[in-house]
Amino acid sequence: MLHIKPLRFCMVLLALAATACGPQYDENADFTLKGDISIDGSSTVYPITEAVAEEYRYVAPNVRTTIGVSGSGGGFKKFSRGEIDISNASRSIKENEAAAAHENGLDFIELSVAYDGLTIVVNPENTWAKDITVAELKKLWEPAAQNKITRWSQVRPEWPDRPIRLYGAGVESGTYDYFTEAIVGKSHASRGDYTASEDDNVLVQGVAGDINALGFFGYAYYEENKDKLKAIPVDDEDDSNGAGPIFPTLQTIKDGTYAPLSRALFLYVNSEAVKKPQVVRFMDFYFENAAQLSQEVGFIPLPEEKYKEEYQKFRQFAAKHTGKAVSTDKTDTAKTANQ
Amino acid sequence: MTNSELNRFKDKAFQWFGIFCTMIGLVVLAIFLINILIDGLGRIDWDFLNNLPSRRAHRAGIYTAWIGTIWILVLSSLIAFPLGIAAGIYLEEYGKRNRMASFLEVNISNLAGVPSIIYGLLGLEIFGRVFGLGGSLLTGALTLGLLILPIIIVTTREAIKAVPRSIRDASFALGASKWQTIWFQVLPASFGGILTGVILALSRAVGEAAPLIVIGALAYVPFAPKSPMDEFTVLPIQIFNWISRPQEAFATNVAAAIIILLLITFMLNGIAVYLRNKWQKKVKW
Image 1 (cartoon, rainbow over the protein chains, first blue to last red):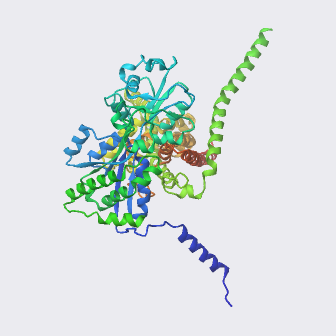
Image 2 (cartoon, rainbow over the protein chains, first blue to last red; image 1 turned 180 degrees about the vertical axis):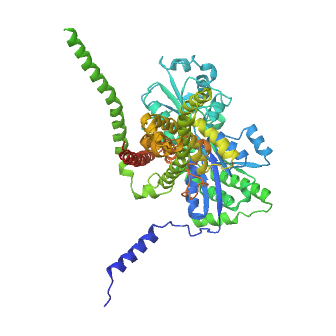
Image 3 (cartoon, rainbow over the protein chains, first blue to last red; image 1 turned 60 degrees about the vertical axis):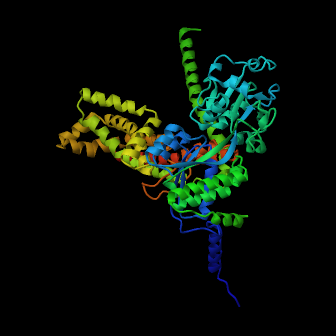
């Protein structure tokens, strides 16, 4: 007769539980990859890179990936000193930042990883604003508007004679740089008398509680707060990329018809970083999964063609600086294995 | 109404006004605590304390953040505690009453009022770049150590000042040297007060995010630091990072993380209060 001692039985159970709870590595996990990957930069891009790094743990368990959030500018500063491998950026590198990198003997490459659509939002009780043109937005946000354009009727005569209150990204963010560039025509130039916050949730609260409000922020914040906000379609008065006012949606942001407020989010990788195998594998992994993961955290993936293009760009850059041509076969098989 | 009645009425009115003022602070604190507890209490479980950061709010945890916070607190108190007390003793017991002393005094008080982000910039340049410590725990601890140093110095001085003159005189009369008097009489007698200062200082340090972000503390760290040279994150940074996420579920995580942060602060305060009471019982004059 089989006697199972309770104690031993419990131990077996515990052992089973322990294996079940332990980290579950990918079947293709590569335990030979070691070392650090240091990433810093934009807090807008952070959620995507965090998601990729999280999944990368299962593929390369011995690699230590760290991500900071010192902003696009802070990230580039460290990037051009060679202190970090990869820089998250919600805007392109500026000339002086690029010059600093070259001075330190670093070459680098810009890679798009996802889109974001800056969404123009008003309060749901706002019945008059049904669309807005880029010219009107410019009139409203340009530096000359300060203390002058303060009522809805000044933007468009049909709109009521009510005060207009503006909410937007803080001047230190890449979002602000992009918005001013796209709307005002000059980066970092806008009126100063608006409610500025680096935290988009604050802007959401502001617009949701003020019937006279108009604000802008990333698409994800609108998507999560649809019940409290009303997005208004934007007309760039250029019929070559979609006629009339266009709503920000997955589709219009992706195909670029939501112009000019659909913007790309970037990763920057430098020539020293691509000499580290763990970084190269990380970038491979990034492009394999960016489409799915960026959507999961609230951004809009690039079209598949574009991902392939960006990935090729990265591969060529890596090959140039490591001195060996790297075949792309490995990732292709990994891709099919994932499906 | 006679004059005395009027005065009594004024007295009562002032008393009620005082109670009202006290209650404002307490009510705000209570509303805040209840709000946080309702939002976050249900989210705290073993997994939350043990999980690594994640894009999925329900799977994300604060393991590396709370370990980083404890590291930073222990290291920065190890740095600031001896320095602050020694400086306090010097200024109070040995420092001459001259212009140099008042110059030092004014500057230390000024330091206590410098915005914390300035300390971050200083730490980044001196500890991070010149000393080459990078964004490590040690850089963070040195920076926060500097940040809390003025508070410790000032309270040490106050505590030493409160020791009665007669104790010193008695000690000197028995032939003790200045150092012996300080070590065996003044310090034990004032240690309760000094610890109060340390409590205040640590409670300030535990909530700091800005200077640590400046020195390069990270938001995503999937491993617990094992040495003072490791990179790290702390609870306030994790909270700051989560609160700016679009998904509502992260707000629940924020509430839960705030509860843990409060618990850590209360625990530290509890330890310090316990030590202080124990110490005060020992002092028998």
